[in-house]
Amino acid sequence: MPAREHPAFRLPFPALWLAAATAIAALPVAARDTAPAYDGTLSAFEYPHPRRQHAFQSQGQALSMAYMDVRPDAARDNGRTAVLLHGKNFCGATWEATIAVLVDAGWRVVAPDQVGFCASTKPHGYQFSFAQLADNTHGLLAALGVRQATLIGHSMGGMLATRYALMYPDAVSQLVLVNPIGLEDWQAEGVPYATIDQLAEGERGTTFDSIKAYQTKFYYNGRWAPAYDRWVMMLAGMYAGPDREIVAWNQAQTSDMVFTQPVVHEFPRLRVPTLLLIGGKDRTAPGANRAPEAIAQRLGDYPVLGRRAAETIPGANLVEFPALGHSPQVEAPEAFHAALLRGLEGGE
Image (cartoon, rainbow, N blue to C red; front, side, top):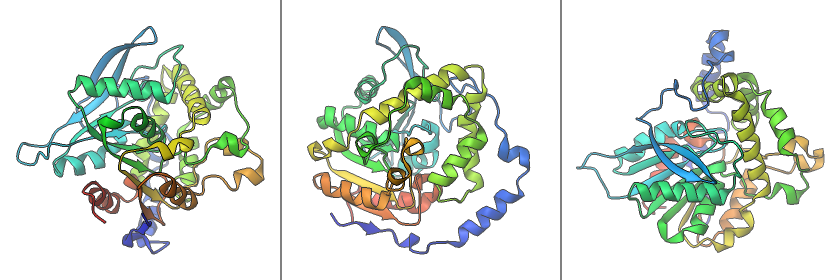
């Protein structure tokens, strides 16, 4: 289907950013540049809805997946379930605004934290794969009595959602990919491999400032808003806490998973209705920092990548937000959710 530009984002520098820049400059330094220390399951971080735990066995270990299961009241219930799959630098909690919008529209919403992330188990000696995480998620949904759902995957969650839809097509009513990474194969493009040990060493140096700097450059086109600080503190707090070593190690393992397990080559095999929601200012490209400059410069071109994906996925519908970045649901929630609800209804 042809791409559609959301009308709210035809102006390259909306006035909202001037206000955001002024507001963040007024914040105390301590509010911007420090983070609390959280344990490896974010037990002291407040989620927007009660956290529950799904206990299961995997790879010889007893594991637990944290999740939120939020239901509409009976009068609004449309009988449909949305499963929200977070990105690598995000958690189920980051979907806070999306959960509220979907529940208000009558959806039951399940938002898990994947094993190795956020409030879920940080396992030692675990072999991470998208197929394994899809199987874990499928087990969670089976335990909750969810036989079919709409999958909404953001960033790394888009890669996971794609793998899930390939493995369990009959369990997926619609696939929604929000700025998914993996629209290109970085290794095939010439990005050098980094070992898990090398990746872990880099992860150990992660701080509030380093997360913010990365997200400002690649996610938000060089502009920051105070609302983003909470999510940076959430991540930075785990790197500053008592479980920092296993947090860094699991993050390195999942970075390897992202790099070595592309899904882009399998897009033509998708057989579920697919909606792509793409912020055109996104430049996320894992590994680009270790690639030769000529290669790094051509990676993460989301306007090109989104359109190519829409042409490759059978019957895909593409909605573009040219002035938004990697996290349109965080950056401009009202416009993003309006487009999401239209897409879920099958409208144009």
